[in-house]
Length: 146
Length: 387
Image (cartoon, rainbow over the protein chains, first blue to last red):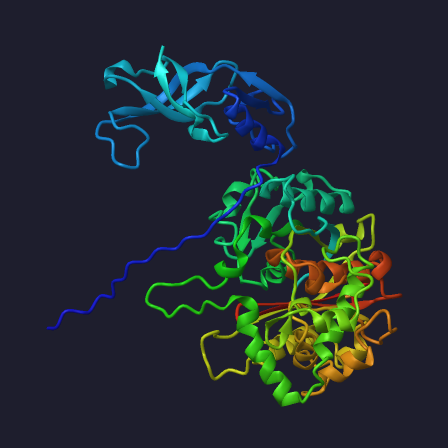
């Protein structure tokens, strides 16, 4: 029996894109550039960070911005024991859902910690800003334990 | 026999080169809110949302329907995303219509969009693909040789395309939503614009636009209660054929002829030029007007250009069968929405709500879209009366 011949070809596709972020996401990104975190008030009064343009329950347009703290607490997490090249940190770290002070909905980011046992639900964390901020999610380099 | 359905709300954004003030979500939202307001409805009145757009690679937002559910009020409701290349705006409207005609839903919202300013629509149309020779043509490069073949077969005068380019821009100047506003355009200006894809000059091609279009489609009972006149859907049809088969008739595609025959039969149309009051037909490059005049049976094969040259398709020349009164794709082209704009604009006509580009007393009209390498066809007939 002959082996079937499997076609194999290296393939790379590349385009340049632009993005208009609009009045809500744009405001959040501008806040990051200025090292400020901003959320938005939903129809039921909850504060959502990052802000959403439209209410996730009622679909109403949202516009009431709320400043939130750069500290918060871990809701839940996953420990990354052996970071790979694509990960944001070279040392072991945690992906965590972080509820910022003043927010009602958690936001995902990475948390620097010496060991897995230091990371717990309810642990307090604080944002560590990048040396240069550009209006992008990575302006928060990571969170660290308080 | 399908249940009756009608367009009860229409919403469009204006069409322009760049909408830098809104996100993609903000753009689709604007059209959807306009359609709801036109129908005097709220998000709670909608049973399902049917969304369409051209390839994801255009804006590089993969599966945009995932991100647009909150902007379109889909929470707790079914949402379906449709894709059939450039005809998608038309086929999306037809998928929406079929969900009402089948009795599945009473009232659906359908939306389509493109934000070409954020995109790479020229080259994302013909992506290189593994294990295939790269076409690398762009839309005009693909269609130009087909147009050249039409010229050979029909012996049309060289300036029929130029005439279409002028006519549709004069129509567009009547429509405040149209992207290109060229009320003073002349045959000479088009002729002197540079040759982009021979025989297509720059001004014989559609622009790249940002924009979105939306409609609310309702069943008979709800449509009768609608505050504005409904546009009754009298026929719906889609047809496809294989793009890569070199033996098909690309000048006068069989799928287009079959699709037209099907939709005409449903609507009781025997003589399209006589029976329709107007049509919105997907003409992204000037020569597609005479080509589709033939493909859709408005003129015998080889004679579509005669209608164009006589002014039969022109509002400004009091033509008997005006085509693309809104300015058509040649005046605005947010690709994913362009087909739906054709469908919505004929609905506006039979509702008597088309403003400065209204055809007086329009009662029956054809909306048309094509896409892929003239591979997908979508058409509907709408009327001011149920039958």
